[in-house]
Image 1 (cartoon, rainbow, N blue to C red):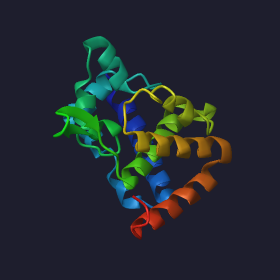
Image 2: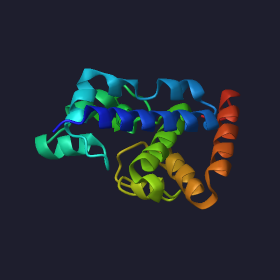
Image 3: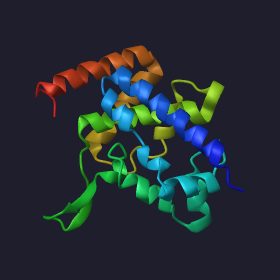
Length: 182
């Protein structure tokens, strides 16, 4: 049974939480554009169809069909997903992970925190995004520098909280704008 209203409420709540986090991080414009493709028919219709409220509908679509068409559409249009950053290396003739630009790593961090808050609700803790990250850590799914930075930020969030982590992120972005970082 499709749940278009519940799905709309969930993705909008998530998106608004990302916007708040992106503002705290100093990348408000990215937050305002975050996940707009989720409202497209290609992503919204399967999202409503496979909606459960406790996890991404893409997971159920993948379990039932063996793949998620909505996810493939989404990851190809949203640069804050590490899956976007894979390309063929002309030297090795193999697909390889590309290091993500800092602003997209920060948006990915904001996205993961918001997703944990959205799906865990009142049970959310600052350790939840790190726990979710452990599912992929060390499995060669993203560039090693991107993985190291994401882990650093998630550990900082877990151990020192949002205020300190977002302050660190703002300082990092300020330094990056002056060309001293990446």
